[in-house]
Length: 244
Image 1 (cartoon, rainbow, N blue to C red):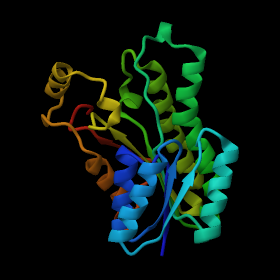
Image 2 (image 1 turned 90 degrees about the horizontal axis):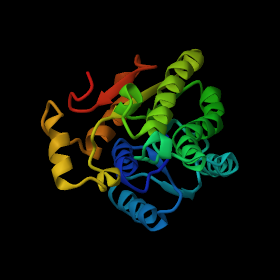
Image 3 (image 1 turned 60 degrees about the vertical axis):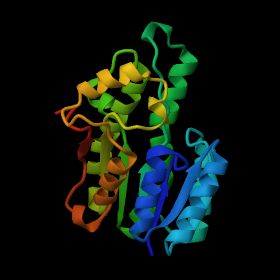
Image 4 (image 1 turned 90 degrees about the vertical axis):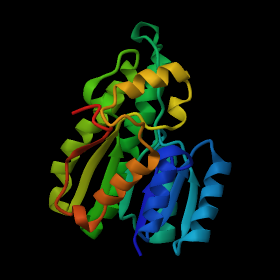
C-alpha cells in the first residue's frame, strides 16, 4: 500500500486532499502545526471510513529540523513516501509599503521555504524507489500577481518556478512534480471578505461560481494517479476560467 504525506492537512484544501487520497487507497501522513484537534478528528474520519492507516504529525513546515523529524517518523511507520502534497500556506492582504520584514519572512517561509524543506526531506526516499509524485499547491496569484498581496503572490510564484525546475531535474528518477493553482476557493482564507465583496468577486469568474476544496483535491488525486503518468512540470489552474 502506498503512502501520501499532506502538509497543512488539518483544514481546507489539505483536509480535502487527505480524504481524496485515502479514498484512492493511500496510507495518509497528516501534517499539522496548530490545529491538533482538527487533525485528530480528520484522522478518525479517515480510519473509520477507509481501509488505510493514518499518522498525525505536528511540525512547523518552515522549520527544517521539525520537517526532517516528521519525515523520519513517517518513514519509520510506512517505510517510504510515494506521494507528497505541499499544501501548507498562509495569506497576507496588505499594501506592500505596509508589509514588515517579519511579515514578509513569515509568508515566504511558510509558503515557499516549506516546499523546499519537505521536498528536500522526502525526495531521497522517492529517488531510492525510482518512483514518486509531488504536487505543490500554489495560487492563481502566483501566475498573475494580486494587488495588496505582493508577499503572497511572490511566494506562490516561487512555488511555480520550483515546480518547473525540479520536474526537469528529477524526471530521470521517475519522480513527477506538478503544481495546482487554485482560484477563488471557499476556505478560511476567504473569511475576511464581506458579502458584497464576494458578489463582486464572483462576477469576475466566467463559470459564475466559487471553487470548492473538492475541486482542488480531485485534481491532485488525478495528478498523482497512473492516469497522469506522462504529466510532469505542469501548472494546472483550478479557477473557473478566472485565469486563462
